[in-house]
Image (cartoon, rainbow, N blue to C red; front, side):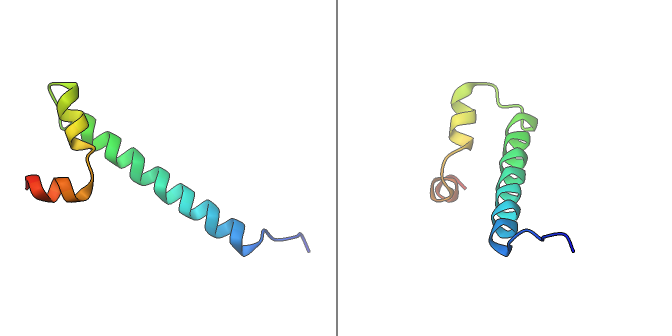
Length: 55
């Protein structure tokens, strides 16, 4: 039988792919919202507590 990848490598790869997908969705959301300036893009990428404070 072919040697299977260890479970730790599988979990590591899945977590990295999940974080990469989240990052791509965040970048797509920033560009699709059509922010007029770089400052708005920087404000969009703030932490969750700052975003909750703005909302």
